[in-house]
Amino acid sequence: MFTPLRRAAERTPPGRDRHIDLLRAVAIALVVLGHWLAVVVTYGERVGGDTVLAFVSWARPLTWLFQVMPVFFLVGGFAGAASLGSYRRRGGDAIGWFLCRTDRLIRPTTAFLLTLGGAALLALLLGTDPATVGMGVWLACLPLWFLIAYVTVVLLTPILLALHRRAGLAVPAAFAVLVAFGDAARLLGGPAVLGAANYLLAWAAVYQLGIAWREGALSARPRVAVPMIAGGLAALVLLTVPGPYPVSMVTDPGDRLQNTSPPTLALLALAVAQTGIALLLHDRGGRMLRRTRPWTAVVAANSVIMTVFLWHMTAVVIAVPALYITGLLPQPPPGSAAWLLLRVPWLAFLTATLAILVALFAFIERRGGPCPAPGAGKTGAGTAAVTLAGTGLVVAGLLGAALTGSAGLPAPMLPVYLMGAALLRAARSSHRP
Image (cartoon, rainbow, N blue to C red; front, side, top):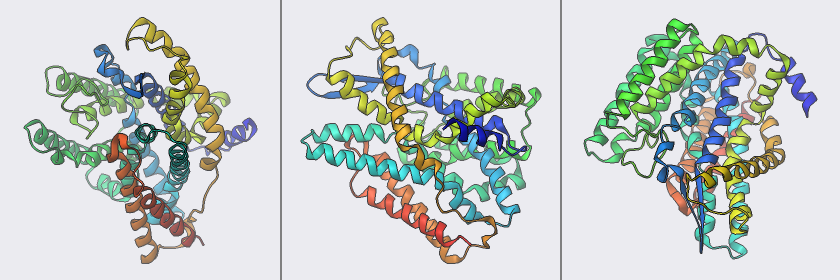
C-alpha cells in the first residue's frame, strides 16, 4: 500500500498546487473530529442522542474552529477551475469534464447507500425496532447533504468560471447580498422557504472564491490575506454577538435560526476569514510539502477522502451498540469532567472502526470508472441530456434522504438515486472514444 502511494506522490505534476490538497486533508480531519466530539449518546429503554451544544453552551464558539465545510467548497472551486481549464486545453468540453469530475463522488456514494440499505433491511428482518433502524440510517446519512450542494456547484462550474472572467470578485459579493436578503426574509418572520435559495447561493459564493483564487483575483500575500481574516472575523463577531445570528456555526437545537440550514451571512463571514487563513499559509504549506514524507501523507489522505467522509458517521452507528448498549461506556452528564475524559476511549474506538471501514471500501474510490477522454470530441445532445437527467435524479435522491430526518432513508428515494447514478455511468461510457 505504501509503495504505490509513494510512487503516486513522486509522480505529482510540477505545476500542482499541493497546498490545496493539504487544505482538503486538514478539513476532512476537522470535520470527522468535530462530528465525533459533538455526538451525545443516551441509552435507557431505547437508544437516543443529541448534540453536545444542547447541553454545553461554552462549546458553541468552538464551532468556529470545527466548521470547515467552507474550506471544501473553497478548495473545490480552485481545483474545479484548474481541472476544467486543463480538460478544455486538451480538447474536452464541459459535460465530459463534469462526468469525469463527479465519478469519484458518485461511485463511493453508491456503494455506501447500497451497503447501508442492505444493512438496514437485514436489521429489520432480524427484528430490530424500526425506529432504531431509522435513527441509525439517518445518522449514517448525515454527510450526504454536502453532496447535494457540491454536485450542483460542480455542474455550474463552467458558468461560474465565465461569470468570474466577466465580473471578478463582484460575483461572490452579489451572491452574498442575495444570501443577506434570504436571511432578512427569515429574520423578519417570513416563511422558511424564502431562505431556501441560500443552500445554493452561499456555497456557490464560497466556491466562487476558490475560482477567484485560482484565476489570480486573490493572491497569497499578507496584504490580501490579513484584511480578509480581520474583516471576516470582525463581521462574524458583529453578526453573532450583538447581531441576530447564533454563535454556533453548526446546527444547535437551542437556536431558532440556524447558520447551516440554510447557510447564512454569518457562515459566509467565517468562510471569508478561512479563505484569508488559507491564503496566508499558502507559501509555508507549499514549502513543507516539497518534502517527500509530508506530501506522501497528504496524497494518502486525499486518496481515501470520500470514503472517510461518507463512512465516519457509520462508525458512530456501530459504536452505539458496541459501547453503550453493552454498558462498556458509562453515561455521565455531557460536558462534565468524566464525560470529557470518556471522549478518549470514544474517539479511539471510532478511529479504529473507521480505519476498518476505509480498509474495506477505499478500493471503490481509488478504482477509476469510465471517464471521457479530453480528445473524445464534443458531447452530443443525447449525452448532455442523459447527464443532466442523471444529475437531477442523483440530487433528488440525496435531497429526499436529507429531508427525511430520523425516519431514515426512504425506500423510494434509493431507486431514484440509483437510477441517476446509472444514467451518469451510461453517459460516461458513451462519451469515451
